Amino acid sequence: MEATAARSADEQDIGLLERLAEVRSALEQEIGRRVVGQQSIVEGLLIALLADGHALLVGVPGLAKTLLISTLADALDLEFSRIQFTPDLMPSDITGTEVLEEDRSTGRRMFRFVRGPIFANVVLADEINRTPPKTQAALLQAMQERAVTAAGDTMALDRPFFVLATQNPIEQEGTYPLPEAQLDRFMMELRIGYPTRAEEEQIAMQTTGSAEPVVRPVLGAEELVALQKLVRRVPAPPSLVSYAVRLVRSTRPDDEAAPEVTRRYVSWGAGPRASQYLVLGAKARAALAGRSMPDLEDVRAVAPAVLRHRVVPSFQAEADARTGADIVEELIQLSRKWT
Image (tube, rainbow, N blue to C red; front, top):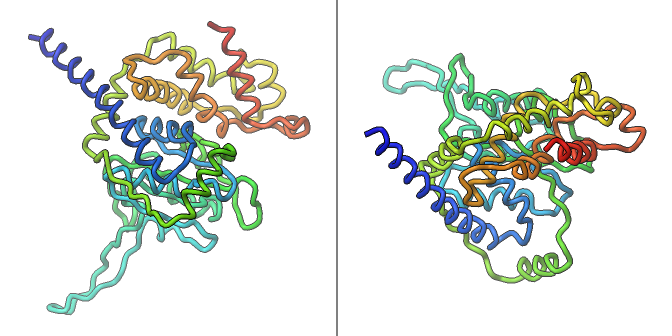
């Protein structure tokens, strides 16, 4: 009987993998109605969604960061909210606040908690670095524990729950750097580059006409949660986990096995959450490709987005014009010699 149940579970997972391939194709098609190109960014967002992680999109203005996230939200049959981060935004503007109400029948006055925009499935934190750290901190509990504490009560957020944030990397006036604790809550940092010439011509043609692309939802909350659980069930070989942990530990300058580039150019490396996200990201990438088990190439593929915002370059790195992304890429290349 146990063998029969195991076969039934395996057959269900195979069916879910096939369904995931259909969902990926449909989501990419719907997103493509509004957003031209950016296939690698779309894949990164889908990996984060399947791994139940949050994503930070970084790019100069005009590269469709906000449009991409809102379009993805339209393609998901989930509750969506957008928070425009500004210097005067308060924590209660995110989590919610208590209002005093009077019961007309009894005349009694009482406080009622009005939920803020954080109580949604998909939360767009637009230009997240435009608000002070005090307000950014309102996201910390929600992103880690999927809960909000307000008015003396802790309220669980509905699942699935994602924070998808945007950030402009070149504008400094009126912005606040994201604290390391905030950055570490994001599973991936996805960097959007300029489109190719052909893509830019298509964008200009598509967005200056009268047609209004309509995006239809293709995936609901219940099915998305089922696919997230499927990703968790994807087996990760011990050798893959060991490789992911070793790669993360190679970013820490005080680790006994840290390479020279880390000791010279890194002040602080990635924590254990990065190891978890490397394994989960590899599982999600394999599942998106229809594979039942991830390999080391899946780890290497997600490693830049998982690690580069968790590596703090040293003063020597700044003096030698080395960035966190450069260091992570060199560590990934060095890690190929381990296998």
